[in-house]
Structures are given as C-alpha cells and as structure tokens.
Image 1 (spheres, rainbow, N blue to C red):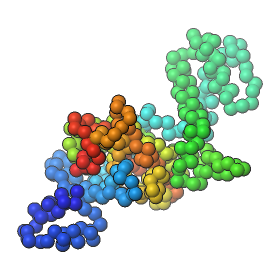
Image 2 (image 1 turned 180 degrees about the vertical axis):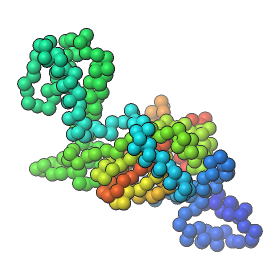
Image 3 (image 1 turned 30 degrees about the vertical axis):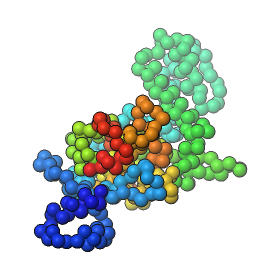
Image 4 (image 1 turned 180 degrees about the horizontal axis):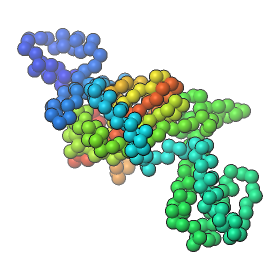
Length: 354
C-alpha cells in the first residue's frame, strides 16, 4: 500500500531524485495518505483518503475514509434526505425492525389487535379474556384466527403476523444468547445491576429510523465504490442500501453485518456520542464519525483463508459492532452492504482495497 503511494508520488513530481526515505518521512507527518482514482465526469468526487484503523488483530480490516464527497455534495444529500423525511417521500425499510424495543410500538399494536377482534367480541363469536397481562389483545387475535379464520380479513391477518414477528424478535433478544450479545455494547448505561446479576435496561433502548436510499443518492454512492474497492461495481454487488437517522437517545444494538464489506458514510454527525463501536477488538474501539467521511470494514473472512463453511464466506465475529447512543443532536448515516463476486480467491481483503 505504501509503495503504491510512493510510486504515484514519484510520477507526480519532476524531481525524480527525491529520496524514498524523504518520501516516507513526508508521509509520516501527513495525516492521511491518498488513494487515487480516475476522475468521473458525471459524478465528480474528491480523492478519497484511506487509512487503516489500528488494532491488535490482522482481521477484521477496518479502514477510515475521509473526503468521500465534497462539502457541496454532502449539503445537497442532507437537504434531500431531510426534506424527503419531512414529506414522507423516503420509504421505511422492511428488512429491519427498528421499533423492536419500543413501548409505544407495543401499545400501538395492541390497539390494532383490539380493533381487529372487537367485532367478534361484541357479537360473542370469541370469548372475552379478562386477564390483566400485556398479551390479552394478542391472545384474542390468535384465538380468532385459529377458530374463525373466515371472519378475519387477509390484511388483518398480515398485520397480526407482523406484530407476532416483532414480539418474537424481542423475546429472542431477551433470551440468554440475546442478553450475552447485548451486554457487549459499549453503551454501559444500558446495563443495570439486579442483585448479583447484570441485566439490560430495555426501557433505555431506542433504535434509529431506517429508510431505503433513494435512487438518485444510490447512483452517487455506487460511483464511490471504485475509489475504495478494486473492480468497483463489476466485482461488488450492493445487497442493501439504507439511510439511518438517529435522534437524541437512539442507538444501534450489537450485530454482525450479513455481507462481505460495509461502506458506512456519515452525512451528519451528532454533537455528542453516536460513535461506531467495535467492542470485541483489542482494545475495544469507538470510531468517531465526521461529516462526509466514513468507514469501510469487512465482516467476513477472505475466501482464500481456511474456512469450515464451504457454502460462503464465514462471518468474522470480531467485526461485531454497534452504533453508540446519540447523546446530543442528530446523526444521519448511509450504510451500503456489499458482496464480493470476483472469481479469484483473495488471501486478505486488503488485496481488494483500491
């Protein structure tokens, strides 16, 4: 990587006698080393600067990016995103359940369920449940669907099924396995003591709101891919493109991305908090987000490495990460998940970095 930069610098200087040692000395005091890409007339993008994030592990590879977009481009993107959210022009994603821990969502679901079953309660089709627990509305719905499916519309059945799916996700998080993952979070205020045990304060969890990246933004983002990954869109397929807006108090839970590479671009950093956290690194890292910058990281092992799973690239457990709680202001990021579809095996993902 250093030698590639040196060769490019040599080509760009008339003084070819400049000593390589001097070049290395110059590089050592410059904050960022530049990677160069051919200009694109339709999508003028500044040279993206790439720096590795220092960890004690060779994997996962995490690269810090700066100058991904110009100041003017970022302003235009933020204006488009904000106006689109205000006018409800952005489409909320269906692949995520950002309201999975929301008490408000639970209450709203109960209203939906009660409205579905109320006519059947009124005419005596189903028995009234006088229990006082918080699953009364759901139990009545399930009873109605299983005993009188002909009296429930298809749309109501789908609505109820989505509610069940969200609540099952909550229960999975509250299982021993889910608790173990949640306790990896570097937002330590989520963890509270209960006697001799440590528990998660579920009332303190509020996730960012996710939207599909509109086509006009996705086109601009995909033109950035060749500046950070060799082969660009010929070797990399976008499997997910999401805008996430975090309000004050919002966070993201620990998870591993289901892709080879993730391109995370910050449109608007918050005033305090909101860092991107990798709790399993040694030492754990909090990566700060900067306007127009971002990170490229790899959540799988490269194909050339020994793997037990021959069906695809194994997830790299150390890539587990989460979005830190936004303590002040709002944060807006774009997340692009990428799959490598090249024919050649690579020993390390550094081989595909542009």
